[in-house]
Length: 301
Image (cartoon, rainbow, N blue to C red; front, side):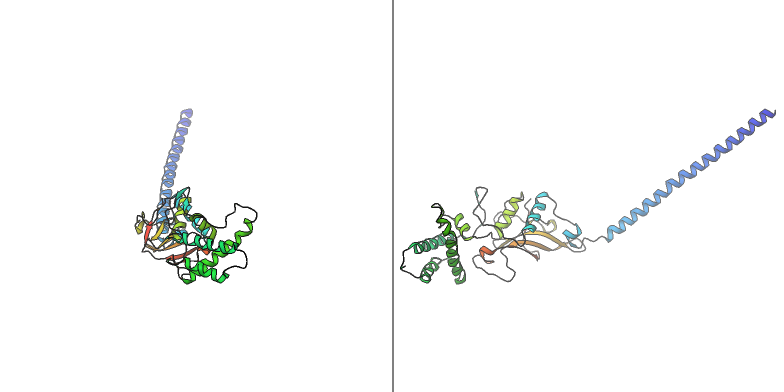
Protein backbone atom coordinates (compact mmCIF):
# COMPACT_ATOMS: atom_id res chain seq x y z
CA UNK A 1 0.00 0.00 0.00
CA UNK A 2 2.78 2.36 0.83
CA UNK A 3 4.34 1.66 -2.56
CA UNK A 4 1.07 2.37 -4.37
CA UNK A 5 0.52 5.56 -2.45
CA UNK A 6 3.91 6.90 -3.51
CA UNK A 7 3.22 6.11 -7.15
CA UNK A 8 -0.08 7.89 -6.99
CA UNK A 9 1.53 10.87 -5.35
CA UNK A 10 4.19 10.99 -8.08
CA UNK A 11 1.48 10.74 -10.75
CA UNK A 12 -0.46 13.62 -9.23
CA UNK A 13 2.70 15.73 -9.02
CA UNK A 14 3.65 14.96 -12.59
CA UNK A 15 0.17 15.83 -13.83
CA UNK A 16 0.29 19.09 -11.91
CA UNK A 17 3.66 20.01 -13.35
CA UNK A 18 2.57 19.19 -16.92
CA UNK A 19 -0.54 21.27 -16.49
CA UNK A 20 1.50 24.21 -15.29
CA UNK A 21 3.83 23.94 -18.30
CA UNK A 22 0.87 23.94 -20.69
CA UNK A 23 -0.61 26.99 -19.04
CA UNK A 24 2.72 28.83 -19.22
CA UNK A 25 3.16 27.79 -22.81
CA UNK A 26 -0.24 29.18 -23.76
CA UNK A 27 0.51 32.37 -21.90
CA UNK A 28 3.86 32.69 -23.66
CA UNK A 29 2.38 32.08 -27.06
CA UNK A 30 -0.36 34.62 -26.47
CA UNK A 31 2.16 37.23 -25.40
CA UNK A 32 4.47 36.66 -28.37
CA UNK A 33 1.59 36.80 -30.83
CA UNK A 34 0.11 39.98 -29.43
CA UNK A 35 3.21 42.09 -28.96
CA UNK A 36 4.65 41.88 -32.50
CA UNK A 37 1.20 42.60 -33.92
CA UNK A 38 0.94 45.71 -31.81
CA UNK A 39 4.42 46.78 -32.89
CA UNK A 40 3.63 46.21 -36.58
CA UNK A 41 0.50 48.32 -36.34
CA UNK A 42 2.43 51.14 -34.68
CA UNK A 43 5.27 50.91 -37.22
CA UNK A 44 2.76 51.03 -40.06
CA UNK A 45 1.11 54.10 -38.56
CA UNK A 46 4.47 55.79 -38.10
CA UNK A 47 5.44 55.01 -41.70
CA UNK A 48 2.23 56.51 -43.03
CA UNK A 49 2.74 59.60 -40.92
CA UNK A 50 6.31 59.98 -42.23
CA UNK A 51 5.16 59.41 -45.81
CA UNK A 52 2.58 62.15 -45.44
CA UNK A 53 5.15 64.51 -44.01
CA UNK A 54 7.72 63.78 -46.77
CA UNK A 55 7.06 66.53 -49.34
CA UNK A 56 7.67 66.38 -53.10
CA UNK A 57 7.91 70.16 -53.16
CA UNK A 58 11.14 71.44 -54.70
CA UNK A 59 13.58 70.39 -57.42
CA UNK A 60 13.50 66.72 -58.41
CA UNK A 61 17.29 66.49 -58.03
CA UNK A 62 16.85 67.28 -54.33
CA UNK A 63 13.62 65.44 -53.49
CA UNK A 64 14.14 62.43 -55.75
CA UNK A 65 10.63 62.88 -57.08
CA UNK A 66 10.20 61.99 -60.78
CA UNK A 67 13.87 62.15 -61.68
CA UNK A 68 15.24 61.10 -65.05
CA UNK A 69 13.92 57.56 -65.39
CA UNK A 70 15.73 56.05 -68.38
CA UNK A 71 19.40 55.43 -69.13
CA UNK A 72 19.25 57.82 -72.06
CA UNK A 73 17.80 60.63 -69.94
CA UNK A 74 20.34 60.06 -67.20
CA UNK A 75 23.14 60.21 -69.80
CA UNK A 76 21.71 63.37 -71.38
CA UNK A 77 21.48 65.16 -68.03
CA UNK A 78 25.01 64.10 -67.08
CA UNK A 79 26.47 65.30 -70.40
CA UNK A 80 24.54 68.56 -70.28
CA UNK A 81 25.61 69.39 -66.73
CA UNK A 82 29.22 68.48 -67.47
CA UNK A 83 29.16 70.97 -70.36
CA UNK A 84 28.01 73.96 -68.31
CA UNK A 85 30.55 76.77 -68.49
CA UNK A 86 32.41 75.13 -71.37
CA UNK A 87 32.41 75.63 -75.13
CA UNK A 88 29.37 74.31 -76.94
CA UNK A 89 31.80 72.51 -79.25
CA UNK A 90 32.88 72.90 -82.86
CA UNK A 91 29.92 73.36 -85.17
CA UNK A 92 29.60 70.90 -88.05
CA UNK A 93 27.35 70.12 -90.99
CA UNK A 94 27.77 66.36 -90.53
CA UNK A 95 27.19 63.75 -87.83
CA UNK A 96 28.59 60.24 -88.20
CA UNK A 97 28.97 60.73 -91.92
CA UNK A 98 25.44 62.01 -92.48
CA UNK A 99 24.17 65.48 -93.26
CA UNK A 100 23.05 67.31 -90.15
CA UNK A 101 19.41 68.06 -89.36
CA UNK A 102 20.20 71.52 -87.98
CA UNK A 103 21.21 74.86 -89.45
CA UNK A 104 24.62 76.39 -88.83
CA UNK A 105 26.19 79.82 -89.27
CA UNK A 106 27.00 79.12 -92.93
CA UNK A 107 23.31 78.71 -93.88
CA UNK A 108 21.51 81.06 -96.30
CA UNK A 109 24.62 81.61 -98.39
CA UNK A 110 26.78 82.95 -95.58
CA UNK A 111 29.33 80.18 -96.09
CA UNK A 112 29.82 81.27 -99.69
CA UNK A 113 30.18 84.91 -98.60
CA UNK A 114 32.80 84.03 -96.02
CA UNK A 115 34.84 82.04 -98.54
CA UNK A 116 34.76 85.01 -100.94
CA UNK A 117 36.15 87.13 -98.14
CA UNK A 118 39.01 84.63 -97.65
CA UNK A 119 39.82 84.74 -101.37
CA UNK A 120 40.00 88.54 -101.33
CA UNK A 121 42.29 88.53 -98.31
CA UNK A 122 44.50 85.80 -99.80
CA UNK A 123 44.92 87.73 -103.06
CA UNK A 124 45.82 90.92 -101.26
CA UNK A 125 48.17 89.22 -98.80
CA UNK A 126 50.17 87.47 -101.56
CA UNK A 127 50.34 90.57 -103.75
CA UNK A 128 53.82 92.01 -104.01
CA UNK A 129 54.56 95.42 -102.61
CA UNK A 130 53.65 98.11 -103.21
CA UNK A 131 50.13 96.82 -102.83
CA UNK A 132 47.36 98.37 -104.87
CA UNK A 133 45.08 98.69 -101.86
CA UNK A 134 45.54 99.51 -98.23
CA UNK A 135 44.42 97.03 -95.58
CA UNK A 136 41.53 99.34 -94.70
CA UNK A 137 40.41 99.43 -98.34
CA UNK A 138 40.66 95.63 -98.55
CA UNK A 139 38.48 95.23 -95.46
CA UNK A 140 35.88 97.50 -97.04
CA UNK A 141 35.77 95.16 -100.02
CA UNK A 142 35.37 92.11 -97.77
CA UNK A 143 32.66 93.95 -95.85
CA UNK A 144 30.70 94.40 -99.08
CA UNK A 145 30.76 90.64 -99.63
CA UNK A 146 28.18 90.32 -96.85
CA UNK A 147 25.67 92.49 -98.67
CA UNK A 148 22.34 90.66 -98.77
CA UNK A 149 23.03 88.66 -95.60
CA UNK A 150 21.15 88.95 -92.32
CA UNK A 151 24.17 90.47 -90.60
CA UNK A 152 24.26 94.05 -89.35
CA UNK A 153 27.30 96.33 -89.41
CA UNK A 154 28.76 95.10 -86.10
CA UNK A 155 28.56 91.46 -87.21
CA UNK A 156 30.03 92.23 -90.65
CA UNK A 157 32.97 94.07 -89.08
CA UNK A 158 33.55 91.18 -86.68
CA UNK A 159 33.51 88.64 -89.53
CA UNK A 160 35.97 90.67 -91.58
CA UNK A 161 38.39 90.76 -88.63
CA UNK A 162 37.79 87.07 -87.92
CA UNK A 163 38.71 86.16 -91.51
CA UNK A 164 41.94 88.13 -91.20
CA UNK A 165 42.78 86.51 -87.83
CA UNK A 166 42.11 83.03 -89.16
CA UNK A 167 44.27 83.61 -92.23
CA UNK A 168 47.22 85.09 -90.33
CA UNK A 169 47.04 82.33 -87.69
CA UNK A 170 47.21 79.61 -90.33
CA UNK A 171 49.78 81.27 -92.60
CA UNK A 172 52.97 80.25 -90.69
CA UNK A 173 51.95 76.60 -90.90
CA UNK A 174 51.51 76.89 -94.66
CA UNK A 175 55.21 77.75 -94.98
CA UNK A 176 56.11 74.23 -93.86
CA UNK A 177 53.52 72.37 -95.89
CA UNK A 178 52.24 73.06 -99.39
CA UNK A 179 49.11 71.07 -98.56
CA UNK A 180 48.17 73.30 -95.64
CA UNK A 181 45.14 75.26 -96.80
CA UNK A 182 44.65 78.95 -96.07
CA UNK A 183 41.23 79.18 -97.71
CA UNK A 184 38.24 77.02 -96.78
CA UNK A 185 36.74 75.22 -99.78
CA UNK A 186 33.44 74.00 -98.31
CA UNK A 187 30.98 74.67 -95.51
CA UNK A 188 32.61 72.24 -93.10
CA UNK A 189 36.01 73.91 -93.45
CA UNK A 190 34.44 77.36 -93.23
CA UNK A 191 32.96 76.55 -89.83
CA UNK A 192 36.28 75.11 -88.66
CA UNK A 193 38.46 77.94 -89.99
CA UNK A 194 36.43 80.59 -88.15
CA UNK A 195 35.97 78.43 -85.07
CA UNK A 196 32.19 78.67 -85.12
CA UNK A 197 30.69 76.82 -82.16
CA UNK A 198 27.38 74.97 -82.00
CA UNK A 199 24.16 76.90 -81.88
CA UNK A 200 21.34 75.84 -79.56
CA UNK A 201 19.63 73.14 -81.65
CA UNK A 202 22.88 71.58 -82.87
CA UNK A 203 24.16 71.29 -79.30
CA UNK A 204 20.88 69.78 -78.03
CA UNK A 205 20.65 67.19 -80.83
CA UNK A 206 24.31 66.13 -80.69
CA UNK A 207 24.09 65.82 -76.90
CA UNK A 208 21.09 63.54 -77.32
CA UNK A 209 22.74 61.47 -80.05
CA UNK A 210 25.96 61.06 -78.07
CA UNK A 211 23.87 59.87 -75.10
CA UNK A 212 22.06 57.28 -77.22
CA UNK A 213 18.96 59.42 -77.74
CA UNK A 214 16.92 60.37 -80.79
CA UNK A 215 17.61 62.99 -83.45
CA UNK A 216 14.72 65.42 -83.01
CA UNK A 217 14.75 68.78 -84.75
CA UNK A 218 12.08 71.45 -84.97
CA UNK A 219 10.25 69.74 -87.85
CA UNK A 220 9.76 66.33 -86.22
CA UNK A 221 9.28 67.46 -82.61
CA UNK A 222 6.23 65.86 -80.96
CA UNK A 223 5.12 67.41 -77.69
CA UNK A 224 5.03 65.54 -74.37
CA UNK A 225 2.40 66.50 -71.78
CA UNK A 226 3.50 68.69 -68.89
CA UNK A 227 2.59 65.97 -66.37
CA UNK A 228 5.03 63.55 -68.04
CA UNK A 229 8.00 65.89 -68.08
CA UNK A 230 11.33 64.46 -66.88
CA UNK A 231 14.91 65.72 -66.69
CA UNK A 232 16.72 64.61 -69.83
CA UNK A 233 14.00 65.78 -72.20
CA UNK A 234 14.22 68.68 -74.62
CA UNK A 235 12.45 72.03 -74.37
CA UNK A 236 11.84 73.61 -77.80
CA UNK A 237 10.63 77.07 -78.67
CA UNK A 238 10.01 75.81 -82.20
CA UNK A 239 12.15 77.47 -84.89
CA UNK A 240 13.63 79.83 -82.29
CA UNK A 241 15.52 78.15 -79.45
CA UNK A 242 16.27 74.65 -78.11
CA UNK A 243 17.22 73.62 -74.57
CA UNK A 244 17.78 70.49 -72.48
CA UNK A 245 15.78 70.04 -69.27
CA UNK A 246 18.14 69.09 -66.43
CA UNK A 247 15.78 69.55 -63.47
CA UNK A 248 12.07 69.98 -62.72
CA UNK A 249 10.53 71.88 -59.81
CA UNK A 250 7.27 70.68 -58.21
CA UNK A 251 4.81 72.23 -55.81
CA UNK A 252 3.56 70.50 -52.65
CA UNK A 253 0.84 68.69 -54.63
CA UNK A 254 3.34 67.22 -57.08
CA UNK A 255 2.54 69.57 -59.96
CA UNK A 256 5.49 70.67 -62.15
CA UNK A 257 5.85 74.45 -61.94
CA UNK A 258 9.31 75.33 -63.23
CA UNK A 259 12.24 73.98 -65.24
CA UNK A 260 16.00 74.27 -65.11
CA UNK A 261 17.57 74.08 -68.56
CA UNK A 262 21.03 73.85 -70.09
CA UNK A 263 21.52 75.65 -73.38
CA UNK A 264 23.89 77.07 -75.94
CA UNK A 265 23.73 80.52 -77.53
CA UNK A 266 21.75 82.28 -74.82
CA UNK A 267 23.82 85.14 -73.35
CA UNK A 268 22.87 86.36 -69.89
CA UNK A 269 23.14 90.07 -70.73
CA UNK A 270 21.23 90.27 -73.99
CA UNK A 271 22.12 89.44 -77.58
CA UNK A 272 25.71 89.96 -78.64
CA UNK A 273 25.07 88.72 -82.17
CA UNK A 274 22.40 88.77 -84.85
CA UNK A 275 21.70 86.10 -87.48
CA UNK A 276 21.06 84.17 -85.34
CA UNK A 277 20.40 86.14 -82.17
CA UNK A 278 22.59 85.12 -79.29
CA UNK A 279 26.26 84.88 -78.49
CA UNK A 280 29.25 85.62 -80.70
CA UNK A 281 29.64 82.38 -82.73
CA UNK A 282 33.21 81.62 -81.64
CA UNK A 283 32.48 82.40 -77.98
CA UNK A 284 29.37 80.28 -77.36
CA UNK A 285 29.26 78.41 -74.04
CA UNK A 286 26.75 76.24 -72.21
CA UNK A 287 24.79 77.96 -69.46
CA UNK A 288 22.03 77.15 -66.95
CA UNK A 289 18.86 79.08 -66.14
CA UNK A 290 15.38 78.60 -64.74
CA UNK A 291 12.43 78.94 -67.11
CA UNK A 292 8.65 78.63 -67.00
CA UNK A 293 6.59 76.14 -68.98
CA UNK A 294 5.15 77.24 -72.30
CA UNK A 295 7.22 75.57 -75.03
CA UNK A 296 7.25 72.07 -76.53
CA UNK A 297 8.60 69.27 -74.33
CA UNK A 298 10.52 66.72 -76.40
CA UNK A 299 11.24 63.07 -75.56
CA UNK A 300 14.63 61.79 -76.75
CA UNK A 301 14.07 58.31 -75.32
